Image 1 (tube, rainbow, N blue to C red):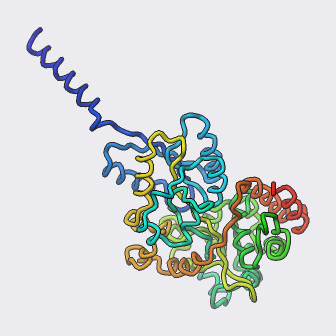
Image 2: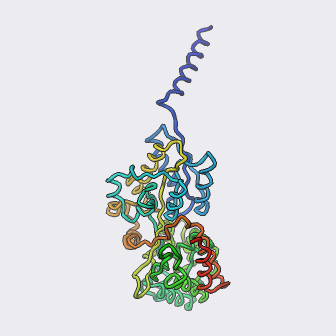
Image 3: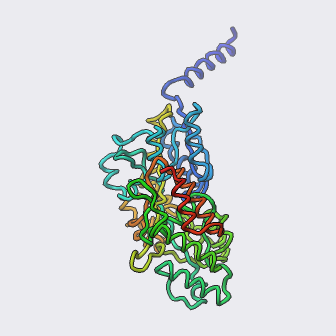
Length: 412
């Protein structure tokens, strides 16, 4: 064998040994995220790049789907044998996921420092029956956004404090010819509509369930849907709201075509970005209104968590990734589209600078976030309610009849 050939063979052998060395074995995680609201896809990719830089033996394959596909994608992947290691999940799913053994119970991994440092309301995102099924990641509620210029032109000196005031202000704006449809919502037949409905229901002192049975068809639950329908009938709600999701709401508001909008945290900085928004610098934000005699403000718990699936073959590496993504330094660095889960972050100028109004609203709203029902049958309940809301705002049924039908079809 020639000297050159011998060198080549030895080089190949050394390379093969080097690559197969356990010290350089690479673990690949599959992670499922949402392609809308809260952190942007670019943010998630940047965070993940920081993680893999600090953990070169772990690779993370990212997949993004719209919120509407997140639940089913997670559940279907569980039985496919090629599921995800880490998944993003909504606050409404831990009951179902615990019952169906989708997520790992991480209770013993939650340290005293984590428990003390994270806002108490954030923990409800990942808890069910006293156990923790991951870490809270997106701490979110819907805020009332308003166009300062339009309100000023209408002679409205301050944003509405009650839902009735909001409707009255919208009528004033419409009567003065400033906008044909002053309010825009996300009332498509989807979970987005449930979040708007839950916000208003909370203001009116309503409940979804009592002793495990539906009561949303009475009292504050009925009042909430009647209010929604009245804004449609009065011509102050953009009629396209019945087909809109949150991104549609953002685009309408950013184009200057709405005086009021209900949306998540992420819209604040996006609507204030002059590159894409016509209303940059004119964006006001407050907690959603209350109802006189019942509440001063309203808020829905729209938070989300990150968890490890029970089918993951790399549970330790997956948990390491979850802890990194939800850590305070990472959350503080990316606080422009989603506010941190950590208490002390709200005293950090790096987090608050440039979004002082949003942080001020968050301090009030995050303290009163109203939960959607905690039940393993949430999907069935939600679908029945989505249909009821759609039917009522289209005028096909009265709010009372629509909600009564939903209660009968809720699976509870």
